[in-house]
Amino acid sequence: MQAGVITFPGSNCDRDVAVALEGAGATVTRLWHGDAELPRLDLVVLPGGFSYGDYLRCGAIASKSPIMKEVISAAEAGVAVLGICNGFQLLAEAGLVPGALIANAGLKFVCREVELDVVSTGSIFTSVYDPKRTLRLPIAHHDGNYVCDADELKRLRDEDRIAFRYRHNPNGSVADIAGVFGPGRNVLGLMPHPERAVDPATGGTDGRPMFRALMEALA
Image (tube, rainbow, N blue to C red; front, side):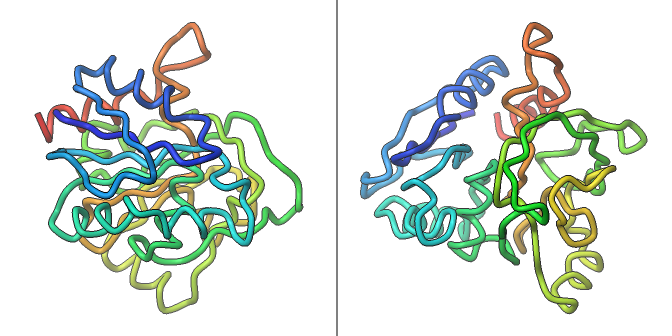
């Protein structure tokens, strides 16, 4: 699997996700937000962090970066795209997933481990997860409160495009949503950090199956 990890000014999880992908067997190319072209890739990852200092809205400026035109085109052509935390915010700003991410309900930065339910296993990102098993993944965000209108929420439910749901909502997200798929199901945005849960030495391995699933689907 050929994976590309894009670094924006303020990214801080780009190396983490590259290491997680390499640990799963992927060949990783590190990319810069100012690049005008994407190499041939099976997967594009928009990592966590605070792109452009989260000015205006989280991910708003980064969504206008030169490379994002190529990411949007690749996603529309069926290339897998994963956006984690700030990457999820960026996907929403770019219109690749529905809804928006706003300030947490408590207006505080939340950094801790959360319990998650896998809502849909019908995707290349989640196919190896046991839907009966509770996952534990870390979160670290101030603007992780997922919002969408009632019609969009119904569409997400009807089309089985809610990927993950919080067991105990940490940020006020509508319907406890922690991650959603784009219309083609080849794009996933999620707030928890699977790349921070791939090694027992750092607290858990519940993120590892996602990268294994991607390898199995895209290798």
